[in-house]
Image (cartoon, one colour):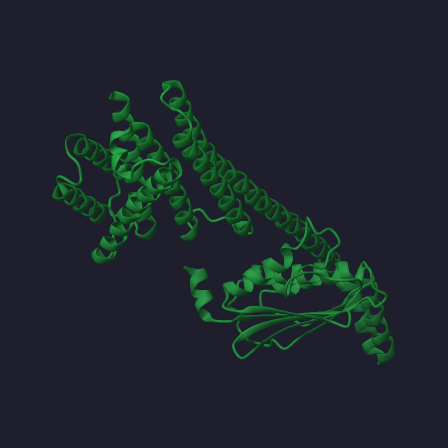
Length: 446
């Protein structure tokens, strides 16, 4: 009897835990005390255990109704939100609990050949029903957490759902086999009955542990990918800073030589030798390898970054034709996000052009109709890796790449925009449009 009470306590705790935690997925806490929910769960568990010990639902339904009402009242105190919607959610969770127990009971009695009316009198069968129903209830809780983004794993959601569904199906099949064994194997031997119960419990625990471990592995993979992206960003910023320092050093040298150059130009001017002035200026520009690109932004963040990427392309004999219609228009989109889009576009183009005879790409940055537009066009060789109508990557190593286009699309959607890709006649065109709204400037300031 003592063992059965402990089992009842654990099952009641699990049911209350899931009811309150699922409710917490919909609403924010009202109470600031850290363990307020856990304390209420323990109290309600003890109350339900005592209620089950001294009474039964068919003999005192009003007591169980009062208990459900108490669950609603405590949840209404703990969580903020509409009272009616909370009542509907909690009632639905209680109904789901009952439905899962009924399904487990029907499953065991049908497969094992037991009488459903005598389940309460057969502890072994009753425990089997509880194990199956609570396993399904735990899976329901995991699904709800994923559904409402409290434990979301990007990039791997589809694979995760397939694996969870597979493990759940295998668990149910195994438990059906065990239920059949209860009804078709002589379990009058107490050791055999206990063995079947232990097997059922082990199957349930292994399935839940498998999901938990898989969840952690996928989280680690996501974190590793995030760290790699951050490391790549740090390397990019380091190269950019080195390029800026080099440019500053060149400016210092230029300032040092400025007096002599101006004196020489002044001398030519005094002698009215304009041809020598022009020749001298062109010579100096050629020596400094100066390429003038249109100024994109007032702070020169995007302009400087473009200079860096264009130099990188030119080092690989790639010609970048840059055009822009931005004059004095204000750019409200985060400059870092714009640079990330440009970086991903140009990285893909540079790698594709390395394989082409025509080493030229076109890049346009402008504003039209309240949208910031970034367009690019370049040739490519070979075939693109696609998934339906979506391009996964244009790079050779399919396992380590493909995140660039996803990153561009995510940034575009962040600013209520979109990414469009056209690939035909071995020409790759990408069009990114983002809403250039002052809302984003105000959000950044806050």
